[in-house]
Image (tube, rainbow, N blue to C red; front, side):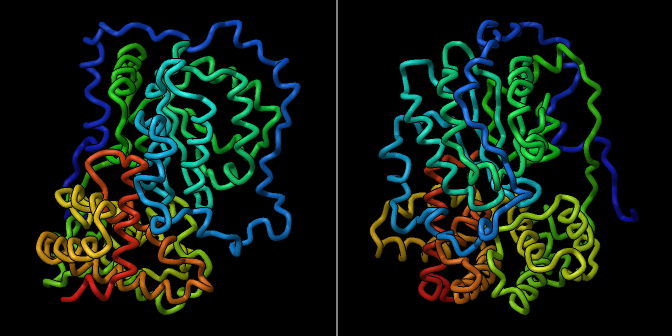
Length: 457
């Protein structure tokens, strides 16, 4: 394409996958220990007492997908439950290990939940029954929306693996509501055991559920589905990836080509760049177009920001915007596409709209008393946040406040919108802990609830 300078290797691949020549020189790695004894593979008799429920998304009974369910209660509330108490009280002894974390959104606009087996402590350190409760508690905040699960398998060993009875109990506990909206499960660095176990369970599971599972042999392959820079990948997992690449020496091909941004680029570039190419206009065209379209025809659409759309659709609409062309959302899927594109714009900014520098201030807000929360947030917005960021954030928050005026129809209350948009306007340089997610959501709810007091200029 004219005006573009091609670079032969994607930045993500270069940064996350390393150079192949370096793999062959790293010979100090030991072959990881098989995570279960061979006799553990004989589990057929243990399945007799388990009732395997079909994942029957395609055969829903009338009313099962009713959005009039208590969406707000399912998503959780940042206002009624203190952000720290949500995980740091009852589950503090589990949460501190970071076994399960939130990592922003994937390329389809779905929340990404990460489970790292290597962070499981040895037996006797934690109560596995309580761990199960913590997993349910965590997922309960997201299962009403489409979500993606990334499982880093490396690090599961005899020292920390849960018992088979625990696995079977977990299967019983994670009923249909957890499976229905899990749109993808990426198993990273699968072992022979995992594949054997899957073959044992396969006859009891629906074909549709099976299609959600994908083995990912190397980290660079995962980058095709999620933003690797949003993942706080454990060092042990990175080292194991290097070991596997050195051992198997796969033919790594670039998954994308970096190009110099077009003059009309909207995604993946700074607000400063957009402003410089937009005759000094601060609000990006994609933000204006998405908001104007939803305001015009979509404010009463149920669950405006709850649905994901296909990667192909997102990429196609992004390319049209980046080329400076008009996007007719009706041709691509309507309101839900516009909603996902708005979230995608925020998520793909090189730096969050609240900036990395202000992240620590943001997550401390819930710890202040109510009056201090308002005054400190106003100070951050007025004195610390760059002016262009302030203008764009004000535009978006003002729009979301308008969305809440139709919440009796669209089901998007202040709390629901805070959960959806919080991780897209503020994040640190790494993966969000669940405590931080609650704090960010609380901050976002504050912006929505007290918009008139906070955005005075």
